[in-house]
Length: 373
Length: 231
Image (cartoon, rainbow over all chains, first blue to last red; front, side):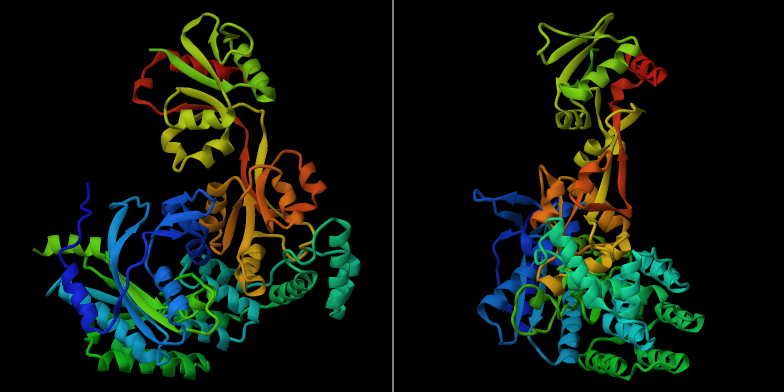
């Protein structure tokens, strides 16, 4: 049986969090399941421990801390920037390792100075690992969702294609499929001649009216799910997207970008070199990248450990910028972190609340401690 | 060692399964009266029959409580993760055919493929303040098809234990994952199957629990061969 006792490093980490000025929070172990499934997707369902309350509410054992911490922030402190720290057990069905293990981390919510908040997250994460594994070699992999979005935008693809590519960022197989599709126009199956005629004239209202009529005749509510207008609009968009292709030069540029992997200190130069060579306007995204890089260096993180990989991202719609991982020599991810500016809005916050944070996999860190000692 | 075969306890599935075993030279007789849930096979003293519901059969054969079961492939794959390491599908029996499919309202004229659905799902939250909802009783098969195969993460499953095809029109869900054999219920509810929306072509199978004691067991071999011979 794997140990379920508090990791020996816990009190040192708690002290570090306190020194970093983060407010320590505890959240209930039993949580409503809906926010986790809503935000992370149904795939999580088979990896969490689900149960039901007597009244039929779907509940789960806390699978992570970020969502409960964000929900608490929305309820109690919206409008005030606040850094939170947590340390406690999380519960997941895993093929390897135990089903209950410890995580700790910091969530930095509401700070509008993105570069310095990003840098602080990287700095604190590195400090935690240095504290837990003194002298141990580890590397940092860093990516930036916003740079990818800027590249896709600068290539001049229609909105819908931009969305598809951005959605797939971090999912190598899916991204590859999409790029193959983009190399040639797609086949579309024709609709009735009446609809085709309205499409040709751009008469979306006409199409929507006909859709509404059919829905009413077949007993479908026009407001419960996708509306007639929405269907008509996407139909027109789909036709536009089917005709959109990337010329070989642009496609080559995109592929070249995704293959970028350089030491972090060289990343700003590599990115502007790429933008110049490809003739793409990326100034805004690159200047943000540079500002963050400078902030990370100023925070005192040694840049030699960090590699920038352009294709590194997570295919979840709430990530917006920085993503990073601290990795052991054996390839184990010890810390995962990133910026998730869209999450608090998804969770119901009325205002836009920027957010960045990281999570320590304490069980993997303890395993490394064993290997080091 | 007695070998237990679990068979469907009622309906077409029971009749079709009994017919195949009878052709295979294994005439099944109920113990006691016709309504009994135990049976035996004439001339096969080391075989006993348990009559169970189809979903019970997939549970029992998957957990190894019975040696063989006749049940739908869909139920087996839905009930168990990594089902092929637990059981062997020894024979496909040619009845109980049904496809597990993804169907959307016919009027979604912009949606023909899973890729279209991926686009719709990605935008759904922004348009409706909630995720795309799928009514189904097949949550495992749905996840495998949407998440693993097509990289679609952003949807919610609404569990539906009956009349799933009616859920979209009734506003209980946006789309469905369900079984269909002829497609007539789908048509009646104005739903269409996506071009790449067939998740599984299912039919009744002779399923064997993978157990070490089956190794070299003559009766186990005889049962498999007898059934395969008449297909």
